[in-house]
Amino acid sequence: MIFSNVLINWYLQNKRDLPWRKTTDPYPIWLSEIMLQQTRVAQGMPYFLSFTTSFPTVFDLAKADEEQVLKLWQGLGYYSRARNLHKTSQIIANEMNGVFPNSYNDLLKLKGIGEYTAAAIASFSYNEVVPVVDGNVFRVLSRFFDIETDIAQASAKKEFAALALELMPKDNPALFNQAIMEFGALQCVPKNPDCSICVFNESCGALQKNKVNQLPVKSKKLKARNRYFNYIIAIDEIKNTIIQKRTSKGIWHNLYEFPLIETESVEDFDTIAHQVQHFLPVENKVVSLLGYNEESIIHKLSHQHLHIKFWKATVKGKLEKGIDLETLKTFPFPIVIHNFIEDKL
Image (tube, rainbow, N blue to C red):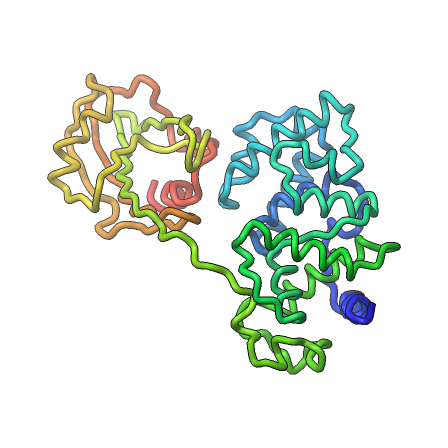
């Protein structure tokens, strides 16, 4: 129990003042946990505050239109999190009278709630004795106990969860879970942690063996796939343009974009000019084509690198479903397109 006591004492002296730590209400705890997956606290905080302002209860979120939810989420990435959040809020509001399941196993049954999020809600809201295992926990435990298990393997989570459960004080699992995650976020950081000020610097296995920067062990990810996107910004005689919704599964599902020509590599002006009319209404003949950016914008996703060019196509007549710039800005877009609209249009 020495590890747990030292860890919790450190936490009580060093923890950040975060709004979702001031409540046991599962709704804001759930929101924060979903938002902070793959996201730093500094980046996620404004989104948490805007969501809780716009949707103060799970009923408010359930009643919202999906596009409103996606617009508020814009820029946070991994948009399936927002879609699942919205669908789950509707289940909780409409089928459970707004009451969250109060156990780890029942929370797991909800869409978008995996083992980590279920454990966080169950321990923080209901004080259930269940450990959280995220990247911070893998890192802290692998370094302190000098564990060389590859955390990319499916079996690793079970091994680390069992160890965390053994260390966890059974009368206060919430405090332990918060403490170990915070320690990984603030002190035992991924690269070049300052071990000279660490409360475990006399007992950490990795530090004694000079292995801090080697742990945790994680096998390399698959190489990212390159994709080449050419977005056509059609401008008609009254300065309106057209957009489309990405309805197929994959990246940016249910977000909006301009007409898209996807190519096998970076293409030049002549290639796009030859193809552009096929992607715009036949009745709106292309009068001129100009490139907004000579060099591709490289937008990196977890498994894909997008090489993006924007092209301005001036067309004859009026676009049938054309929208003006102010209306355009109300739609939810991937952040790379949103930034283009703000900067260039």
